[in-house]
Image (cartoon, rainbow, N blue to C red; front, side, top):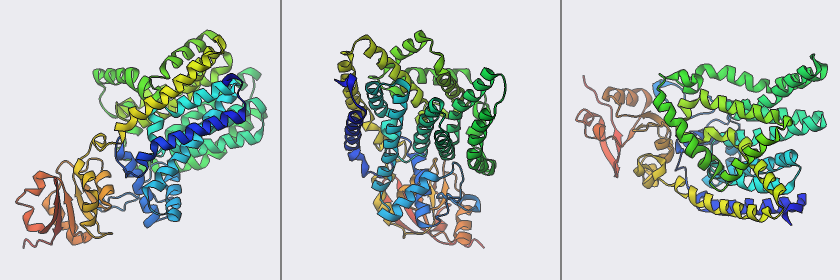
Length: 490
């Protein structure tokens, strides 16, 4: 019976669900970047592509554009995932399948990490297994588990930090503390907001001081160990954050004027769609509600760390509400660990009520497997890319229209990354039909630009453009490829 399952048996069953997930992702493994948030994925892939082809230095993550005459280095998060994927591509070839399988392996470690964490919390393998399956089939996790965004690695490392810090609290084993600190470092390097998970260590440190009414050497060692290990991440962000000009994340909710109707709309969206459907999924929602009831009713004082984690994620959410909006679902990945811990509380409550409930819970898990698979299928579609579909439909023809390695003018691309990624060309990227003809001549003269891709009807039909055009190489849908020439207006 599932309620008496052994650790080895639970790992075998979990492995079967991981293989099932891989099988369900096979139709998308060979697809190049498209679908929901191909913007952020394309940016990530430009880092990977440039590590493979141009500059393997992990300190120099490069993108596609040289706008403003600047070099194309753009330092945001420390690009450890991008660099690791590039390393894999150097060995196995520059293929999208290598990228997607690499990211899926990160997802496997996330799944294993959440399972071990749940075993620590509930001391019940059936509860941990059932909850882990539901976590694996959270729509947001299931979709991104083969899509290259650094948040995947950040989430994975945060989960393993959570596992090792909780085991440290139980065992006081210094090796566990070191491992927890290292995973917190990797999570923070991968994506700065995941530093919020350190609240678990912070609350433990403060609670210990209040309990003993003084700062002990043990508490000091606990704090200093983590602070020292986190130092590389702090150095990185102190170095790069001054270059984040115009990044709304730095200003949070004060980045723009407060409009209460807009914010209420965002909150309503998250309450009625993001949390119940995208983060949890419909099959898991009732178990979450039961878990909330069980947690409140139990008045368990050993879960102060969980309260602090819930609190810090919501603080982050409200501070970044205007950036998260209704579109950045991957910004919500830090919520997944505690959401599914509460789901686990609901599962535990049902198992306590009746051992036979494991059959119902098993049915819920299999329902989740089917529900999430079909729910996420449209997410990979060209339509959900919210970009000119001609760029995706005619990718190979557009890519071959211009010789490899040629820098080009590219418009329109609000994202700055998608168009150029799909046609595999770096250069100068513009949007909103914002390309003055004198800029074209300057780029041709000063930067040896010979070609231009444009889906701008305004620019393409402009009489002012004609003197700069040597030839129209290709027309595909709304996109024209031009060969440029120097125009001497003297």
